[in-house]
Amino acid sequence: MRQKRQNSVREHLEENLGMYFFVLLIFTLGIIAGTLFTRFLTSEQVAELNQIFFNFFDYLTLQEPLNQALIIRRSLLQHGIFLLVIWLSGSLFFGFLLAIGCIFYRGFSLGFTVGFLIQQSALPGILFALAAVVPQNIVYVPLTIVAGVFAISSSLVLLRSRVRRQSLPSGSFLMQYTVLVLLLGVCLLVGTLVETMITPVFMRAVASII
Image (cartoon, rainbow, N blue to C red):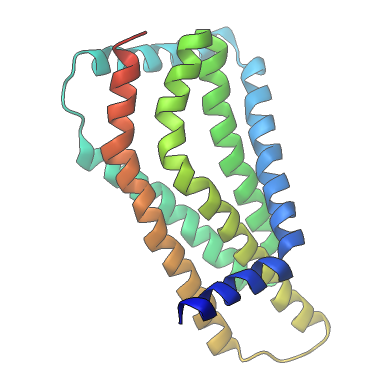
C-alpha cells in the first residue's frame, strides 16, 4: 500500500511538473510584487503600520499570554476562505483565472509582510520576520502550491471538456476534487497549530534579544 501511494505521488509529480513550475512562478511573482509594493507606501501608511507593529512588539516583550483562541479563529477563517476559493476555482471551467489570482495574492501577502519588516527594521526586522513567518509557512507554502496545481488542473479539464463538447462524470469528478481539497484543509490545520503554538515562542525569543 505504501509503495503504491509513493508510485501515485511520483506519477502525479511527473505528469504535472510543468504545472508545478507555473504555479511556483506565479507565487514567486506575487512575493516579488508584494516586496516591491512596500516602496510605494505613503508616509502615513508607513507610520500606521509601524505603530501596529511596535505595539505588538511591545506586547510580546511584556510576556503577556497571547489570545490563542483568537489566533486560531483568524487562521481558520483566512484558510477557510482560501480553500473555498480554491474549490470554486477548480469547479468552474474558467476558474483557473481565479486560482492564479489567489496564488498570486498569497505570494503578495507574504512578500509584503516580509518586505515591510525588513525595510523598516533592517537586521532586527529580518530576524523577527524569520521568526514570525517561516515556521507556519513551511507548511502553508507547499500546500498553497499543491492547491493551486489541483485547482488549475481541474479547471482546465472542465474547460477542455466544454470546448471539445465531451461529457465528464461530473458527479464523481467533483466529488474526487472536493475530497482532495478537504485533505488539503486537514493538512492546513497543521500549519494553524504551528502558527498558534510554535511561532509565538520564536517571536518572543527574538523580541527578547533585539
